[in-house]
Length: 219
Ligand SMILES: N[C@@H](CCC(=O)N[C@@H](CS)C(=O)NCC(=O)O)C(=O)O
Image (cartoon, rainbow, N blue to C red; front, side, top):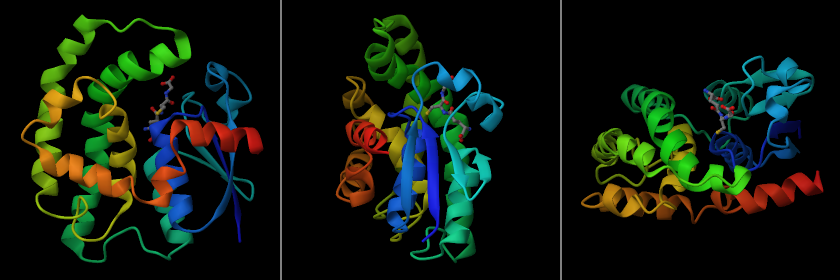
């Protein structure tokens, strides 16, 4: 079984999606924990010149950008498959991964999730209500679109879980912990049902912030 190292500050949803993919694939891995701030200094900048996380290390091969890592793992470890074979479902998965990068994380999760959860936990930040309020229209637009795309399916692209569920679910699991979730989920019960379904999976249960902190200490 190949061995994988994942560099991250515990709590990162992008890293969580990679850890969840490794668990779905039954792969062994280590969490190589970074302390807050370490991601902006060497040696991490040599792994990731843009100072972000996660970074995957596999037999001397370093890779950053969660989408690239997720697709690498899915090609390298084909069972169980996490990309649909049907071309339109695969296109939908690709679209959702980009929705995560461009609209869900940027301007929504990295604002509301940061103000409510990450900043207070890592830097004793007091949430800025005006910044959160300004992000809400975009957050509603993203939730409306995710809810529309999910429809009545079990997972975002159909009945099969894909890479899109892992990344979107990891980011959305932050949103459901915020007080804004009640407004954002109103009339969008399918989103809460889908997240509950994901949270029954070992890959999600074993990759909460607390569990990743414990994995990092054990590494
Ligand atoms: N497009 C990147 C985004 C990664 C990203 O933004 N990660 C966040 C944590 S979830 C991060 O590194 N934040 C630290 C920072 O921006 O300084 C990817 O897919 O890997």
